[in-house]
Length: 384
Image (cartoon, rainbow, N blue to C red; front, side, top):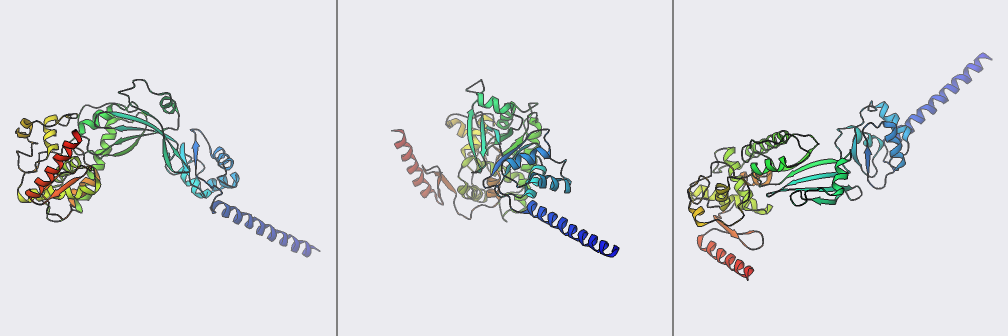
């Protein structure tokens, strides 16, 4: 009799083990299988939230099949206490494992509403926009120019006061260091405006995520570190035989290329023109350097150059001096630096605007004069 009881107990124990193993296997499969979410969502995790509240929110939005399994997975992987506050983009079909990684990895928001401060040549523009999870595109909600409207729009103020709002500062290619500093000093959420101007050319144009209270100096340091890395990498991979003796000279020429064309496909050609001129001992004869000599990089000239300025002897007047000016004339972007150190293979030594937003290039003075005459005709017709 005891043998029968023991045998039955053992059988029951084995059955229970199989059942438990099956449940664990089923739970693990649910945890790692593609999720039920059909379209991406923006999951908001407020400060002070916990994994239970997040799991219930995910289940309520149809992103996971089981809040309990999600929490067990978080506990098993020891990520229960690693939850970060923010707004996170949860892609369609994301597994519980992937979602858990998204909300615990780094804490940087990946969706939701953000305020973008765009620093321009003449001022600052604030843009409130929101990411549409389904299209993964930002939709503009409101735009605010503080110089035109001293009082912020209601939508801007509302978003500015929200706890999960993201902030970004965008600095385009071609700004001078003075313009960058003035722009950053004008961003209301940044702290501790600075007076000292960093070296020209050594601020990497880019989009930088910031937080209220971020200091201006810390952003400038990030920009300098980024530009130094970009320049070092491009110099290491430069084409052989360039008429540039150092990374500093490359940065100077890249700043001229940046100011001469806004077309990405033209940058290597424009760089080739200036480098061909340097090789042949010709003066660069480029207006942007003259303008920099007049303004000293502080603001926009706002008019055409005068003949006296084109003939004036300044260190930046490349119609008068030989070779490169002493410093960059703006902060070039990565593309202009790379184009300068890997220029197009051309024999061009001239270029002039062609009326389409680009330039007409020429190898001889006769060809160049024809292109200039064509451009003058386009200018005259536009003035009629």
